[in-house]
Amino acid sequence: AQKITQTQPGMFVQEKEAVTLDCTYDTSDQSYGLFWYKQPSSGEMIFLIYQGSYDEQNATEGRYSLNFQKARKSANLVISASQLGDSAMYFCAMLGSSNTGKLIFGQGTTLQVKP
Amino acid sequence: NAGVTQTPKFRILKIGQSMTLQCAQDMNHNYMYWYRQDPGMGLKLIYYSVGAGITDKGEVPNGYNVSRSTTEDFPLRLELAAPSQTSVYFCASSYGDRGYNSPLHFGNGTRLTVT
Image (cartoon, rainbow over all chains, first blue to last red; front, side):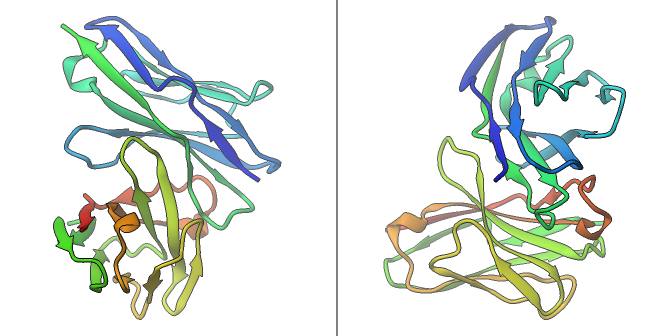
């Protein structure tokens, strides 16, 4: 069975500082993808970044980067230069080659950026 | 290009009533999904479809039904609503047949309250 674990229910960060949101996963698939979504208070789900299991380099998208450590089965999201608009809930999710496109989500981490 | 459109945005049902949540996508995605999100929690898969005429159960299908007569539409039917179905419902779609590197695109959600 596949599982995503986010152990930080809530995080605080000072504006303009960097923050790391933790995500560990468990899967027996050799091929899989890891995703991060942002859910602001307005409720929509916004796709942020993707990392494939065979990608040798960590994914980056603007201020977002994914610290992928395959041996540790971790896929932490790093947000650099935090902004007030980054305050939201963040979900780590996984698609495996065996699960027919069913995205499995973690419990989420609420990030609050302080001015 | 509207993406994934869900209607209604809000609905209040009485116990025992029925309703259909509508979902349409215009991205020609083969895969479509219904998730529910309870307060402070991650998303749980209710049903999914890998193409017109094909549907399958997810993690929490009880109390729901779906149909997929066209590529674009994937309605979710609630029969005999119960308070436990109070939740936010998200429809999503993806190029799931392209494998595990296809992010899901989400609608804006339907907030349902059953009293």
